[in-house]
Amino acid sequence: MAAVLSGAAGEDALDGYQAERLPVAARVLADTARRYERVVAAVREPGRGTEAGLE
Image 1 (tube, one colour):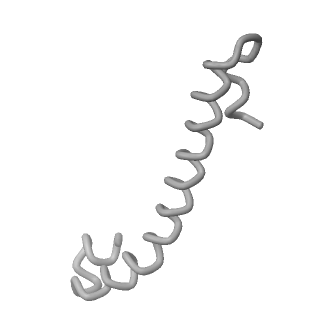
Image 2 (cartoon, one colour):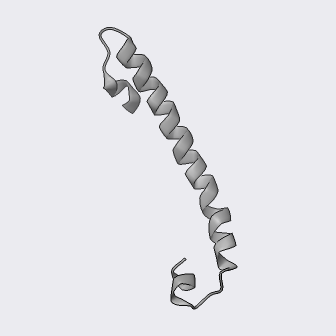
Image 3 (cartoon, one colour):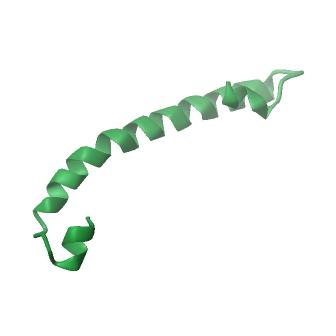
């Protein structure tokens, strides 16, 4: 990305960047969704707290 911004590479280099980063973003989003669901379930369960999302 830095090469494109500096002019050292053409904008077509961004296609490779996107292909490389999208799977990583999808994994982060999936992990966040799983943690969110655990926290919401824990908050609804008496005696548990938001720490359940950290498990």
